Image 1 (tube, rainbow, N blue to C red):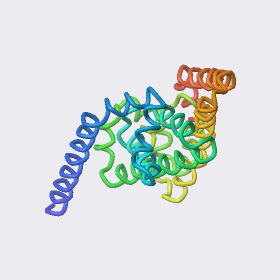
Image 2 (image 1 turned 90 degrees about the vertical axis):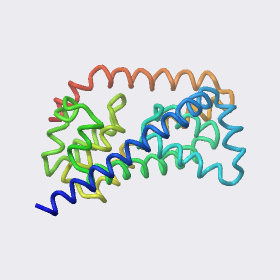
Image 3 (image 1 turned 120 degrees about the vertical axis):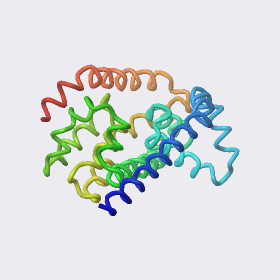
Length: 225
């Protein structure tokens, strides 16, 4: 009984600390980062101002974007392609997103269902029930992470409630999110090189896929189920 009370106290303390950090980062840096990312040239100058540490700052922004979801991940990925080119931009984004996804997974596994329910609505959790309660839910996780328009960052927390092993989750999130990262970085790289026609065509295709995925996400989730 005493152990349960101690565990509850520690969990409550950790949840409170995370919530405080969440809102502190949101109010402290959210508006400023959003402002910078709206203008790739300003964002580039800001990152380059950190010198050799600029790459680490960019990766940290990707980590924060996943864990605290301040801004849409695609915007940061496009900015990465603009800054570093399609290849390095994809690599740095993949590193940051994977670290952020693993942190979400670890936080959810540590703090449990009640914490995730506070972060994500009960309805959304029910939609992913087939993954949470399925020992072979790896394929479902992979498909949802792969599909455009589905809530990938929220799913990173949900994944922590599943029986999936840490190593398997690491591979799933890295491989499934890679195509979207590469496309976004490619768009950013072409904007930087003023290949506006290519950027517009690829962006239109990406947006179309995102809209299709978003509008049909419930059907897709039911189909996976």
